[in-house]
Length: 506
Image (tube, rainbow, N blue to C red; front, side):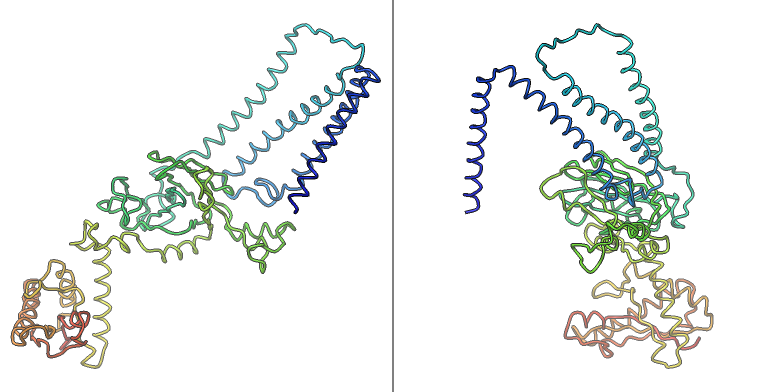
């Protein structure tokens, strides 16, 4: 019904316009075409002057009214070190172009009014004037020179790259004082990558991209081992950040509006920019709090005001497809203490997803970090046993001593934990041990007893080969007679197949 009414109104308006046109034609015939035309010119000239005034007032007034919502004005001053320079260049450019805009609009409409067609008026011919040509060429050239030179100076500041010779103050193990992160755009999200404790991002090869390796990281490059993939961007305030930017499919754009940095993400062509955040997210929120425009309820969270829910954001500034809007990511700027605490909660992508899988080139060897972790774990268990008063609490199970299936041959990685025991016995010269081997109940009990004894003996032989006196060691095999878990499940049987030692004297 509503559509029918609207259609009827439009038809009536059309009929009215047509009828007015016919009336105008009749009036022109009665009064004469020239008189009617002159009357229309005067009226239209007046309308144009009124429109000019209204247009300029609206343009300037709306800019003033909405300035607190625009980047660079009100609370939205740049949150990065170089951002103020960009805002300054923008304001200088706006000043000169604003003058030109106002003058040209006034002249445009004034000339339309002043030189409207009037009966009896003739056009005047003005000869070529070189001075006029020089003036309107020279003035813009001078202004443009200052704008371009100033812009280049700011551009060089923004696009200056980092130095590899800088000394790190961000993380002790890193070589550079800056933090380098990576953003890879794809339809429709950003895949983020941070360096670990070494402060370096590992190499990538697009040929190695797979379901478990979305960035094509080269796992033989050990710099990749501590890199992690967070779901949000978290940055320490006051520290220089280098963003490495690339894309996996189409053209994207890595845009951080509040920091005044943006750069295209181009498939196959890595780009970058460098900036230093100078305001934490909380500090920016407090600056918004001072403005009435942000002291209203957030439509998405009515219990909070707009200033309370503000977050810096990462946006894609290219129309990369139908899901373009979902490229938005939250950016948090925090204190160095908060940043370090956040880092501690992140897990290496290699260790959480790749380690031990078929894609792991080091699955048959231990990494330095794993050797250190296992040594610390062993020492903690040893210290606890040495301080225990109950006999049962002085038994320690080898967590990483393993044997080939059905034999007493040690696996290559077993030596690390046994070397930890060698080091402990050299430290505690009076310590004597009883080594014990255990199996599950699978197979013949007599063979299990023999196998457990041989495995305990193998551990004894390894220790003596490292210089431990044989008189400090005894060994025994218990077969399946002392299970610690049920033998009805594979997991239980796995725990029953163990080797352990008991501290006899210390």
